[in-house]
Amino acid sequence: MSDWTILCDFDGTVTVEDTTDTLLERFGREGWEVLEEDWRAGRINSHDCMAGQVALLDMNHDEFDAHLAERALDSDFADFVDAAKARNVPIEILSDGLDYAIHNILRRAGLDSLPVISNRLQQVGDREWSLEFPNASTTCRVASGTCKCARASRAQNTRKRVLLIGDGASDYCVAEAADFVFAKGKLLAHCVTKKIPHVAIGGFADALNLLPMLLSGKLVAAPRNAVAPPVDVVSA
Ligand SMILES: [Mg+2]
Ligand SMILES: [Zn+2]
Image 1 (cartoon, protein in one colour):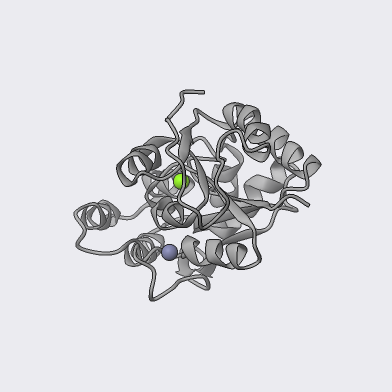
Image 2: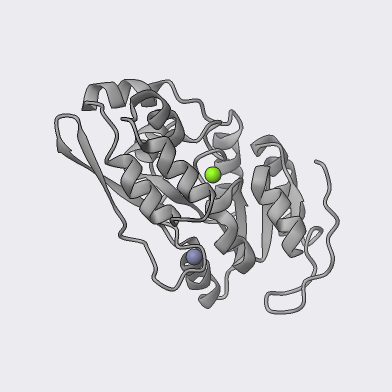
C-alpha cells in the first residue's frame, strides 16, 4: 500500500463545469445571483450561500435527472481512477457540492464505488429542495459546507500523505494542509500565492502522466512535516 491518498474535488475537476452553477442558471428562482454576489464580496460564507441557493431551485426530480444526464466528465478521469487503484492509492471525492448529483454522474461513468464526502441534498416538496451539511466544521478557515481540511488531517493522522486534485475556492482550506496539489483554475493561483507545493494540470490526462512521478518521489522529495522543497510550477 502506498503512503499516499488522493483527495479529489468534483465540480470543475471531475466534471467540466460546476454542477451547482449549471442548476442555478437553469432552475434558479430570482435571488440566487444576489447570494452569489454576496459570497464573492465576502458578505456571506459559502455554507450560507449554498443553503440559500439550493432553497431557490425550482425543479422536479425528472428535470433534475435529465439535467444531470447532460453533464460532461473529464474524459480521462476513469483511466486516472484505474491507474490509482492499480498502484494501491486510495482515491476519494471531497466536494462542497450536492451528493445526489455526484453519485448520479459517477454512476453513469461506472465509478459509483468511489467514496464521496459532500453536502446532502434533500427533496422537501415536488419542486423544493434543501441542503444539509453533515461534513461542516465550525473551525474551518473557509467555512465551506464540507470542510475538506478536516478530511486531510484525518488521512495524515494515519501517516498518509495527501495529494489534492482541484480547481476552486472550496479547495483552498485543504490545499494548505495537503502534501502536494495538482491544481487548475483559481486553485492554481492560490497555490502560487501561498507557496503550496503543486504542479499545474489542464485535466486528468496530465494527472495520469504526473501520478507515477509523484509516487516515485520525482515531484516531492521531502517526507510529510518536513519543510517542502521549492517546486517549480510546470505546465504539463
Ligand atoms: Mg471545484
Ligand atoms: Zn476546512
